[in-house]
Each structure stands twice: as C-alpha cells, then as structure tokens.
Length: 140
Ligand SMILES: Nc1ncnc2c1ncn2[C@@H]1O[C@H](COP(=O)(O)OP(=O)(O)OP(=O)(O)OP(=O)(O)OP(=O)(O)OC[C@H]2O[C@@H](n3cnc4c(N)ncnc43)[C@H](O)[C@@H]2O)[C@@H](O)[C@H]1O
Image (tube, rainbow, N blue to C red):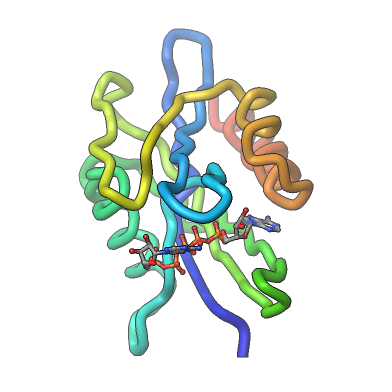
C-alpha cells in the first residue's frame, strides 16, 4: 500500500506579489516542500493537512483561507515505494505572520512562483505550483 501524506500549499499576498511558503527538511537530502506529513491511522487527509501545518509551520485553520475545492494529488516513489501526497491550496490571512518551525525543518522561505518551482525541483510539484498559481490569479 502506498504511503500517504497530506498538507497545504500556503501562499501570501505581499502588495502585488504572490509568494509561496517552503520549508527545508532537517534530514535526508534536506529537500524543500510545503508543510505536510504522514496520515496517521484513522485520520482523514484534511485533518492530517491541518495538523501537520500546525506542527511544522505554527499556523492554525484560523490563520488561513483554505480552498477546500482546490486540491492536487502527487504520486511518486520514495525508496522504491509508492507515496501519495494530497495538498490543498491555502492563503495566509495576515501576510506578516511568520511561520514557527519545528525541529523537522531548518529553514523557511517565502518565494515567488518561479523561485518556488526552482526550489522544489520535482516536475510534478512544479506543475502543481503552476496550476495553483493560475487558480490564485483567477481569485483576484
Ligand atoms: N527521510 C527521513 N529521515 C529521517 N527522519 C525523517 C525522514 N522523513 C521523515 N522523518 C521524520 O519522521 C517523523 C515523522 O514525520 P511525518 O512528517 O509525520 O511523516 P513523514 O511521512 O515522514 O512526513 P513527510 O511526508 O513530510 O516526509 P518527508 O519529508 O520525508 O517526505 P517527502 O515526500 O517530502 O520526501 C521524501 C523523499 O522524496 C523526495 N521527494 C519529494 N517530493 C518528491 C516528488 N514530487 N517526486 C519525487 N521525489 C520527491 C524528497 O527529496 C525526499 O528524498 C518526523 O520526526 C520527521 O522528522
């Protein structure tokens, strides 16, 4: 069975700019991703996404506008085992509220779409950012 994780792709608006939050892992290949993590037994994906966002970035549901109908699913392999990651799009209400990191991450950045795509590196994640970005532009 595939390993399952869930999280939120969080963006903020700073003036005319749209920026995406990325966190850098404190382990392994020190990769960058949106807040997300393993779905615990009996937990639904959305509950996981909220819990992991609180644990990893310090943001609660009240800090965010969550677009429940804007969801993307990534499928990839980690150590040859399939993994599925479900992400919802979310906007940080107060763009000046900085995240509070846990010991799972060593660094955070707010990045433009193109810098976020470069930083995550993986094609499916880049495509997801593009798709979410188009959705955000239509929200304005
Ligand atoms: N590897 C590790 N070593 C030590 N402690 C660990 C660990 N992973 C988690 N932990 C610890 O385990 C505990 C439970 O964590 P928890 O967050 O609850 O569970 P998790 O499932 O491990 O969480 P994540 O899904 O966020 O894990 P990840 O960052 O490894 O996954 P990702 O898919 O991004 O990344 C996994 C790999 O896939 C790669 N990858 C990411 N995105 C893609 C993609 N789109 N396509 C292909 N490969 C990708 C990454 O570069 C990376 O190599 C925590 O204490 C945590 O610190």
